[in-house]
Length: 109
Image 1 (cartoon, one colour):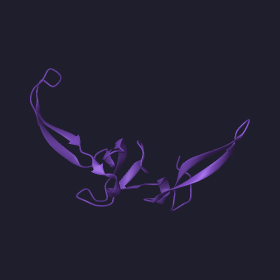
Image 2 (spheres, helix red, strand yellow):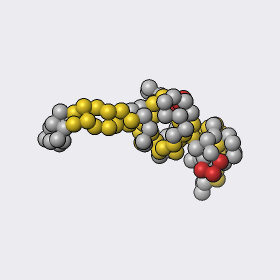
Image 3 (cartoon, rainbow, N blue to C red):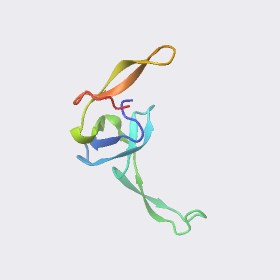
């Protein structure tokens, strides 16, 4: 997935259009993400020992990763690409795959 936990994203379609938030959890198998403060649902909960009052609880529900776009600091929403970078280590050259912003060309990781 091109989106990771901790990224700031903007919703580009659906009921929560143009809302921004931080990614709290990523589900790669289902290609969904949970974004802080976006796609809030209400759930009725019975009283338990952990929650003695019960009542109506609010949670963030997962949204599909195709409905969010990564926000690159000062440049705003951007598409994400991958490229390999060769770094010189003490003993050898190390190549690694990194994410980069297609709008600015800066490495994100």
